[in-house]
Image (tube, rainbow, N blue to C red; front, side, top):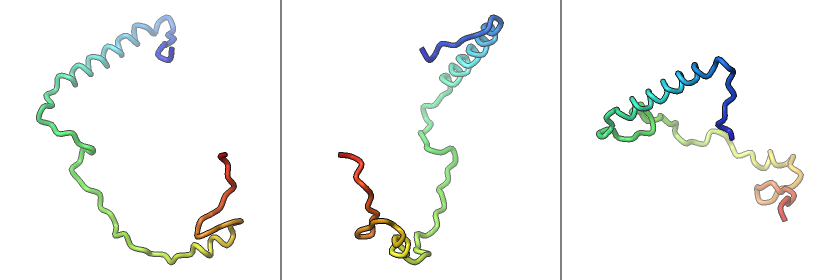
Amino acid sequence: MLARLRLEDGESDDVVEKLSRIVDFVDQLQAAPTDDVLPMAHPLNMSQRLRADEVTEIDQRDFVQENAPSTEGGYYLVPKVIE
């Protein structure tokens, strides 16, 4: 049902031509030799530079949780919503 398209009277020829070009392009891609091509996750052979995992701020959990209505053991307590 979702694939049904409503076309105006003069649109069908244009749509048929565009869809045919898409199918022809897919056929062209299918014909490309890919036997020796390894799958890859990214087109560039690069690795992401990551910063060192260092603590840069002091632990302020207790200070921040002073405004919470209810905490226990460093966690926020919330009302149970699932029986």
